[in-house]
Length: 368
Length: 129
Image (cartoon, rainbow over all chains, first blue to last red; front, top):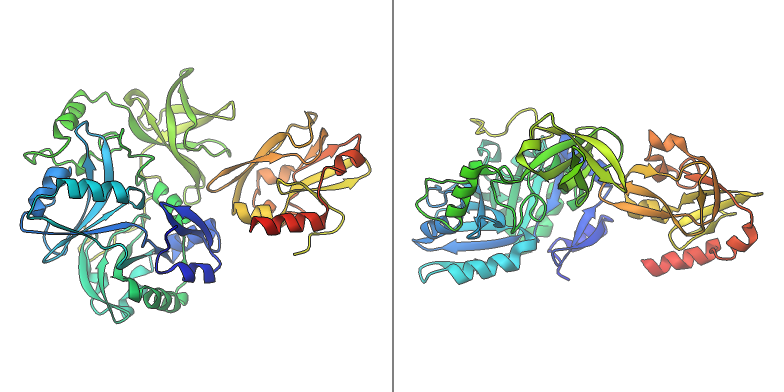
């Protein structure tokens, strides 16, 4: 199994380590609920070095990427970061990703679970003028997430991370090391994703934890990350997105730029958009104490109408929450459904996503 | 490691304390630590009969559902109702206030023979890690 450059740090911190996408990763340290609380009220530090990191270069790289993705890539300006999806001809999703536009290249971060698939896809599609590099073994990715992120990072950064707008990035030193700092995240809180050389990872991780300790910074694992993103209404590939699920089904129509002249899956997505009768992801809150879990049946009017895609207790909501894939006629907020759990039907109600929204947006200018 | 004395254990990481013909059941410290924060406990119905090692409920952590396999069989005579409001008690005090349910057993000696002593359980746990 693979290990990130920070593996020994996690072990030394007493992390519970689990296999994830071929890496031995920390699922928790002090405990999922404690780490969740830290991120929501103060800050948490995540090792995301297992995620795929590809560098794309070439004059035609932007236009090329535009043909493979649903959102706009070529129009991104240096310093921009954008959420995007790669789809297939039928409109199903290969991966959801973030592109970071730098002056002379693009950084593309993909889900760790799709690293192999995406590397093969990109290489098979790349024309002569586009150069691809797999940077994962050279680069570490550390995410600092929570309301105190900016005040923790600022004194350690060579630039002004607090001045970064949401979904933008800049090269600056962090703890004296060259870094790419992006104001992006997967928790629904303000925060930064920091890319550094693998050789600098341990020093940066330790310095951040040390500097942030006085402000309540704690290491946080993949368990807390999953609860945070679910509460924030963010999709997880394999759950709300999959080869058989399109961005439209996952409520990500805003990311699909139909005005682009051509991209893989465009025709299928146009048909889906126009028919509008596709099963879609909806958020539900359980009435009672029994959590819903992925795979449980969703029932309406006495019939199974769909299934649970993700489910957990949501501490910020104080209830059990879940995403379900259901027909459009039972997907509106207020719809009462039931979830079959170990043979018993438990009440749930569809709510508008996200389940949780932070109080204020980060970044000067407050980009929405 | 050292388990509390007077208990027997199952390979499913449950403990049993026998007092006459009533056995109190819970999960071990190793189990609660492995599970992480417990958010929900589903216990067998009072009055129901369970067989030794049969599936008799679940303990749910934030991330996962774990089946409970009762270490002793008999009639369920009491369940720990405080866990409804405070499932985290199983984490906080797994051998005390985090007890799960009580079983009236008719053949305690015979059933105990199928369980592990604290020393045997310690060795079993050591093999897991």
